[in-house]
Length: 323
Ligand SMILES: Nc1nc2c(ncn2[C@@H]2O[C@H](COP(=O)(O)OP(=O)(O)OP(=O)(O)O)[C@@H](O)[C@H]2O)c(=O)[nH]1
Ligand SMILES: [Mg+2]
Image (cartoon, rainbow, N blue to C red):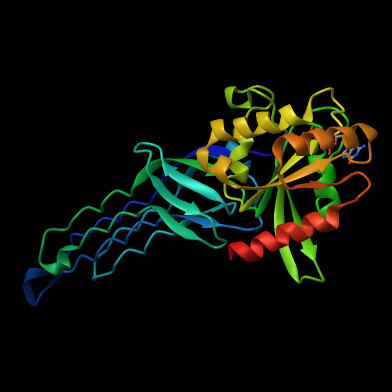
């Protein structure tokens, strides 16, 4: 199951108490204070781990506590520090403090690390010629985790346009492909490797959009956040209109859904791709489309793997330009 958001509770360890103790001896009239300090509480630390892909584990476990520090003891012995608690999350997780709504960290690179709850300080013992102190409590927080996948290229389009077929032909991904809408129910990532160009990029296939996706129709627009960070969008159109829709209208509907979701997404560089060009209807529709929109469009048949090389070249070229 692909889970891309979660709420968790984190609690750092409390500091150990300082010790109140006196050294006494027949030769020492007034006892000499010798209470040790309490150990600091452990921190709760979040770590971006590239081997994790979803927030599924957080459906089952929501509480993460770090260890408290030990109390100090006599003979100036300090208490041991509490152990940290490490929470591993997928790269691309955005961490938000639920009580304030503030962003704590965007874990957008592998091995990014952030302390999400600070351990309490240990109390000082009385050997420092003061009253022994109690340890301070550790920080406690409610956090929201929101996963936004990290991909270079995102594919958007209507259900059944052939998005999964395309990603299966150009990358190492092996998504389910079928002739009914909403076959893809969760985002899939694929790596595209171009040996001759010595280049590599990550492409994301997301569930199809329909008119009203921003109002929750179909599977809604909740998966669009996964293509928010991509550099380029591939806008894939079923030019044959296999499901009985008009390709020109499809193109406009998807663009208006993108706009309803976010202005930035609507402004993102789009490479237009006409799919299913192996079908006769597509050859008719494309003439109308070109006349109407006068935009550069790549004509492919994902099914027959035709026209894909030119498309890949265009994608690679755009990366070179954006660097
Ligand atoms: N004729 C033809 N059929 C295609 C082409 N590309 C995809 N198809 C077919 O279109 C149907 C839908 O393909 P998918 O790749 O599952 O489409 P999708 O856009 O991922 O669909 P959802 O996951 O439901 O959004 C399948 O029956 C494919 O075989 C193409 O270039 N030509
Ligand atoms: Mg699909």
